[in-house]
Image (cartoon, rainbow, N blue to C red):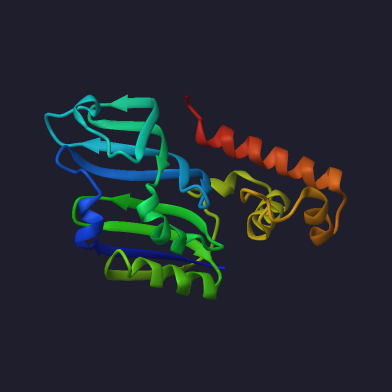
Length: 214
């Protein structure tokens, strides 16, 4: 498993679908759920508005719905958002339906997009090919996948992290699921009850870490 951060310039079609007249940047903090079949994604991110504007001044694109503003500090707004991709863009979105873990930094500005993911060699290669469909790559940086303090998974024990990653890779968190708890337990080599307990404790730690301080 390796991490890759890709920095690219969005093409004209990608730019057309975005509204940055009052926004300086959008930074993804955590992707909570992705459903590629329905083109939906839920996550937490920071929207930074340009000087003189507030979040209320921003007209969100049709596909973006701000479900809640968790924190506001000057022109930086931490938001819980839902993204619903229109049907005409579904074919493009499904190019990113890969066996990957979305990571930070993932930042969008008017002229540049930075995306970071963790995956195996084949998954990362397919990810880079998908990126080429929406922009011109400026820079690619590969790193070893090390769970340091800034990574959300650093809040887990080694065993919890191992089981959560296996669950992700095996499709346990897909919709519909590609594997159930009993099948996942057999792959890991422990009981179903122990597997579910590890997952629940890991999920509770991740949620607590995301909302720490709120």
